[in-house]
Length: 140
Image (cartoon, rainbow, N blue to C red; front, side, top):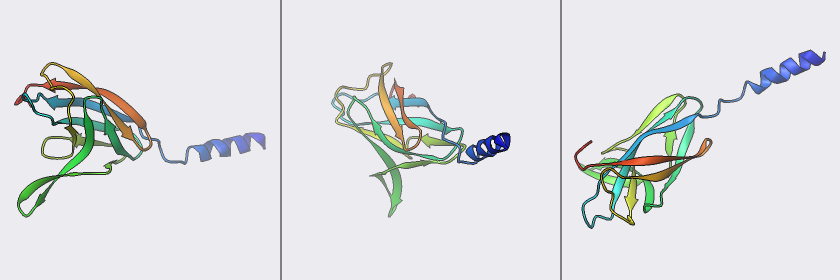
């Protein structure tokens, strides 16, 4: 009887949703021009398990917010988004002209060849801090 109860408990434990396994890859930003106080970060989010949401981003380089682009009356506009869904077993691209991290109030120029940390905060998987590579303008 005891083995049956233990087997039943083990089976029930496996019935819950699979926790997300999140990795942030290939994070990059373009170098800024002299006097430019804003920039953007791009990356690929890979989720090898259960669904999650990217709910915040932060960096010591300046203010960071999640942004999306939308077409309104034939004009492209950026807008802040509260969260980015990360479906189970998926890849989410943060890319130029699409979802991205907007940087404002940069404390120093973004210089090609440098890097800086950004923390991605996920609702279930928690924080992931990655180094963002700064590439020359026009390099990507």
